[in-house]
Image 1 (tube, one colour):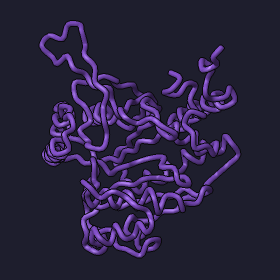
Image 2 (image 1 turned 135 degrees about the horizontal axis):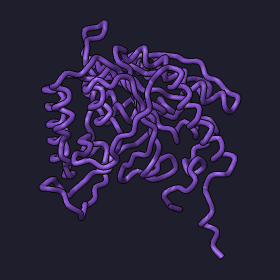
Image 3 (image 1 turned 90 degrees about the vertical axis):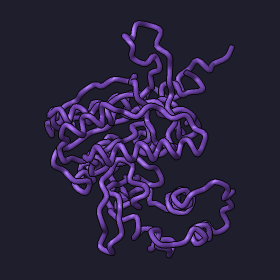
Amino acid sequence: MSADWQPTASFEVLRLRAALSARIRAFFSEREVMEVETPVLSVAGNTDPNIASFSLQFSGRTDGAPRTRWLRTSPEYPLKRLLAAGFGDCFELGRVFRDGEAGGRHNPEFTMLEWYRIGWGHQRLIEEAAALVNEALALVGRSAPLQRTSYRELYRRELGIDPMQASDEDLRGALGDIVIDPAGLTRDDWLDLLMTHRLQPTFAHDRLLAIHSYPASQCALARIREDDEGTPVAQRFELYLGPLELANGYHELTDAAEQGARFERDRQVREQRGQPSPPRDARLLAALSAGFSDCAGVALGVDRLMMAMLGTERIADVLAFDFAHA
């Protein structure tokens, strides 16, 4: 008889996962950051061209509202609406969904922790994210010191190129003997390939690395400023433990007009790629227009954190049932 009905994670791991969830909630309770719950289904979807959303058709009464609803890829937009309404520091711990992402390190549904701090910048938030990760690591008798580096410093030091000024040809050359089909790839694609193929594999497993000041073209929902060399950079960071990216944070954009323009650029890229274009979130834009406090926010992948805690490269090892067994 087939045994594929069995859980993919051990009972010991599932108990550790429960302890991690309790530790996360205690961490924020001690800091007076309030837990909230926001909708999983929305009339708007994620416009990011690199993220695919699931959609479904609602069969009940809608009073003229769209029947197509989108499963959230993160709780970011409704959390920001709460912030704009004046709720204050908050976090959400829950499931999110991304289409097309299944494999050794990915599952189409996974657990995300996202939180926001009023009046903070992204550099201060790096410290809190690192503190949370170290509290998680303590559950398995581990710790990891934090190191910071700018995106530019990292590429210069490890690859000998300036990611802000190098030509596309130089970026391709820095891949060395790694052969990639260049068809349709943009400059940011080459930078990402260098990160995943040349840089991430070298990150120390016992160290937290916060990479900040990304190219302005990779700003997502972050503010843009000039670095010490006068180059526009995005005020965002990514936090790694070894080669695993755990978190992505921003000094949040508060300008509704600029956010609308970024949504439109996303739509154009999706159109060029022949991708479906989910409706942009008009309620988020209205919230930003109403007045959005200066803040920083970060999203952390809880399954990735569990993988890093246990030293496994298989997401199935930290899930009760992975996608293949759901």
